[in-house]
Length: 290
Image (cartoon, rainbow, N blue to C red; front, side, top):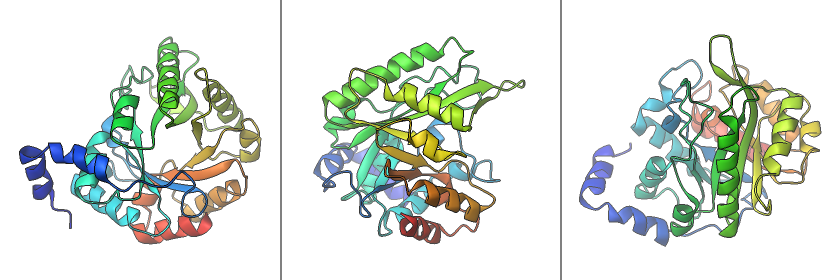
């Protein structure tokens, strides 16, 4: 059980402990991962107000439950680290769950889910200087490109600047790009077609004056080999929504993993909230797949 009272007491009485734990923790040797590729647990959804997993609208709203699932996942052999916002990363530090782990700080959370300003995805989370100061391994940014939204260039420019600043510090810049559009009801959705994935990947790869430290985080779409042929950058596969047919989802992931461009997976809700609610079994299945 997660002792929420202890976490809150520490935050009140000894907040400086969080910084010490970040700086003193044992860091990973590199970005190769236990299996030769990285398996990262993603948990930055709540900061965008995106709490849904499967059929549960507020699945990620219970912080004690989320932390319990994260700690259990991170403890499994083959899990290399976490991608999250500062509040979750710091809870995990206080729980002692990040020793030897890769930590990727989530950077732009300003495009709140369901808002009219969602495409204007400002960098309200980690900044490169803070990621470096805390001894983390990189930063992740979501890059949604809506051809019909004039706010898109602002997000592109901000993302390019963050890629530049991360690279200057020798840190991974993980960019998760999508071509997006508004539905007639006004909801922002990502286009999960092969062509859209190719176009977004090529745009993301060209950000900033160097791509030396850029990794792409891409969805698994129908013709994944065509998508992966569009770039020489290391690629992380993203998990996406919880699938009703998990065996079909796993088969698609397994096929994509045969491509040498794929250097790992960053999976959140599909791993933390699997259809059978067996976190350890879901994790072990993915480790075996990799």
